[in-house]
Length: 128
Image (cartoon, rainbow, N blue to C red; front, side):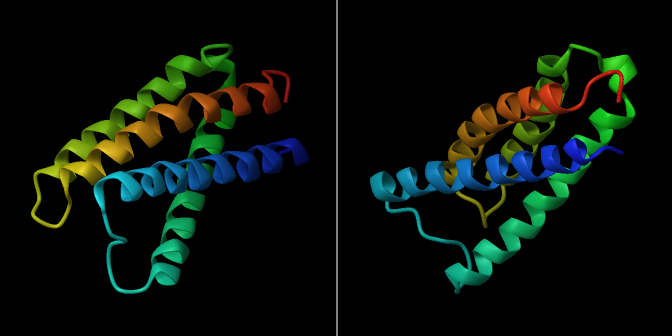
């Protein structure tokens, strides 16, 4: 693996960590939505670890399948988006997750998956 693959992981992680913070922050300001759990610091730490795992998987799968995926980064991002949107819908029907949280999550994913797909297409070529 080339260094730019690791850079792609870092950039994807930054995007999928920062975008939800902005979207959830905006939703909190408008709807009064609160941070889940007790400590905002622990929530952010847990989110950072979870998003790092997603970033590693997103980049690694693209890297391993780059010859098949080729220039179809938007389709690749769309598959991830669909998987996460279905997850948001599933969480929204549980008592511990609000509809507002699901909507904020869906908006976040609608932004960060296409951006992440573009990042991997820029940093990981079929010639890697």
